[in-house]
Length: 234
Image (cartoon, rainbow, N blue to C red; front, side):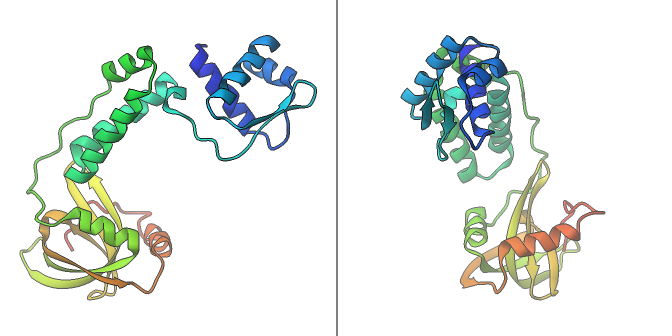
């Protein structure tokens, strides 16, 4: 086990316990000497981990410590890169830019060996299936979802029929073949799925809808047990 992975394992072991854990037990769990354990604890404390205790009393990690990126294992870094690459291929431009910025920040603080592995990972994301470009601002949709606000839209269904809808948006799905807005439609008085490329105009009414987003999401999930929601043509 390389040192960065060992430090991560030590943090995870401390996180699993709400009471002080003896140094001997920690060393046994990690398969290292007690001297190495003491050295690793000092390293983590120097990096900002709020570890309290001493050899005779045991050690405890106080809540609130965030793992720095250099503490990720190689497999975790590969998972992150795969996720970022998926977002870069399939999300809209503001989210794509945010993913690229986040990946750059992680890469900047990684040790050289891990940074090279991050850049050379062989995990790839396939191309997005071609579909009409959205005419709506998905940033506006995300803002409405975040603030639980109603959206007013002009929407064209699969048959080419145009209608005006007032929607309570609570989710936005990203797929290789397109993006789907999930919400409660006041016109239909039910959950509906709207393809983003069929939204012709979009206005945030800046009016909170009367129910909590988490509640709507739970109820919607119960309706999706037997059918996927990708074919949003409503």
